[in-house]
Image 1 (cartoon, helix red, strand yellow):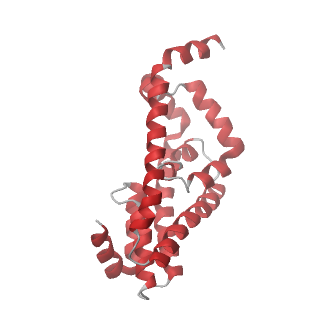
Image 2 (cartoon, rainbow, N blue to C red):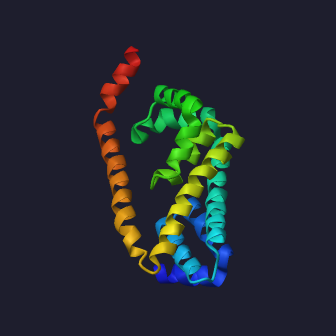
Image 3 (cartoon, rainbow, N blue to C red):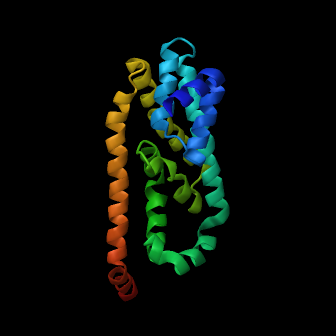
Length: 205
């Protein structure tokens, strides 16, 4: 996979990095944990500047982030409500929880979006709740960009420093990504097992 990314980055330059990061955000065929370190390696060879690599990677990711934000915003919470009421069990989500999440996002949306952009797996989906609750676009763009710059810069600089040894980055990022996925799956299973009990509590309250 990494050799294919190398060829696209070397051949396409900044445009290739933009396209890869856009695809990674909209439909993740290749993780950014591979794309940006590879781009950093190419920059270390002098074929691209590190700044242009970071800008292209950030711009591509932000184009994907904006796409999902706008899709979710067009749907909106009220249109989403029938789906939640019909299929909430499988999402382990009921409408009172959605309303609580809406209030939480209203108070801490900037921090959630900004911090979420530097967490593997979460970074690709945090645009959806932001769009559903209609978070203000300027704030969404600002904090998404800040978090995305941090993420893209860290990976690109690591690739630039380590040269072709970007597998060293995967040794750290890989287990972290796996841990996040395991936590999400564990939480989902636990919420499935306790679904009826939580629904009764919601009904009592």
